[in-house]
Image (cartoon, rainbow, N blue to C red; front, side, top):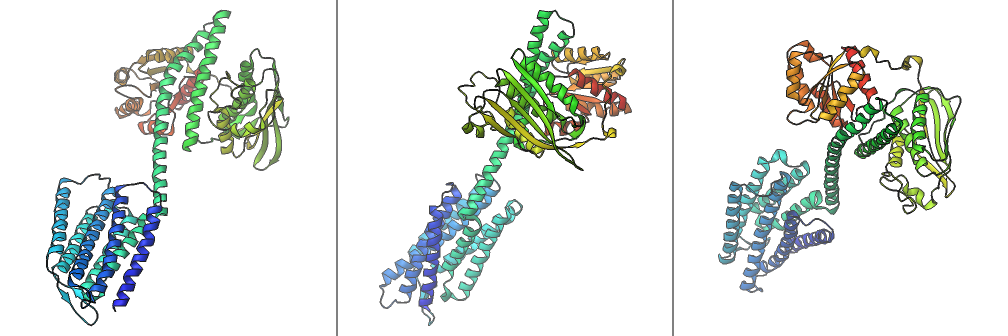
Length: 611
């Protein structure tokens, strides 16, 4: 019997030693949980060693001096009490970590103090009270005050843990709940069996199984690694959310002054300035639009990184896109001795279905890039039909220039955001380095891949292939915009910035729309009680009452008019979160700043026709 018990304890020591080696050699964050579990391993290892020693000394009392036997037995009981106390603290720390409690409440601190006081007194009693041995044919054991203290301690510790589990049951992660429950059940079974038959000596095995349960379910290095990855992912997601929010706020704040720059320039150009003034104004307009494009690039990059970018397919005119692109790029070329050549497949249909805005953006990015790095020669835009089937056309787009070319070793850097290749040679070339990265991501979302070929010092070609369906006549609206029907309409513009009010009012009056203005939501509500407007435009971010709060206040007013009057947001933030907020408040649509006269006219026509 004694030999079997020794074998069992030695087996427990071997298992525990293996766990300790793996645990202490694994890299991990040094938290209080880590420290407690480390102490549990060390304490239990010491306890099992004294367990083996006392199994031998207690069963050989005729040859082992009584003093040695008693001392070893006291260390055996003392380390058992210490180990049980550490396991109890470890479990409670698990629970408190789960509910994000760094410190205990006042009642909790009092209970913990009483528990520590009890452990201290119990340890002293174990080392000073008499030891009583019982001899049996199956083996000898101790049944005096020390044994009773251990059983009482087990009952106290288990009760303390169970109470904590019950109180915080809903907050504890299922995996931790399973580990804690398993440990409690193991200790109860081991204690009950030992109480029934002292000679079983299951205390060491029970605690080893408890530690093994915690190791397998919670403390395994692989599990800790997964948990650490999960935490790092959460941190990254939180940081990305903060970054997106920051970008949205900065975007709005930058678009407000940019609205003034671009808007006032548009108004001045419409006043027929002289040739010199027109030249200056167009330079201001070009610079303003370039800044807006940088803002758009930053927002696009943020959306792409957050996985919130959508490709929206709808009917469009390929001819119109090509005309728009030609006008923009020819202005970009300016006085450079560069010829812009269009090589368009004669069978390319004019009416296609796709995301016209993003195709236009990609072509402008690629052509702008070609203009930037080409000093003379030719830039050729080629669109060829690769194949055609029931799903539509497979189109190959190519932009080839006779510019400086790209070194072979630099080709891999091209599609990384915020980077330029050959920085020494390209010093002074404007740009954020985001255009190619964004274009590559957009093409990927459309099912294609942006590729590049180049011969350094000679030429560069960017090309990609995507599918576009052909639009039917019923899907295509070829009517030109005619805003003459807006004459006589009334509008209310709400904005806390005087210059934005002036720009919106001027644009509306150009469209023969009578416009009133209000500098805040409260002033606008008073105007609405006196006059019913055909349409309302409101800034999104305003002090005291935001655009969404103002809209909610309008919708709560009594009467069909307030329920149905179209309200359009003027905003620099077009994120998914902002659009969701618009919808909840009852905002019908939005215009992105800087305000485009065509967009303002189109939305005014759209929503006043509906209502």
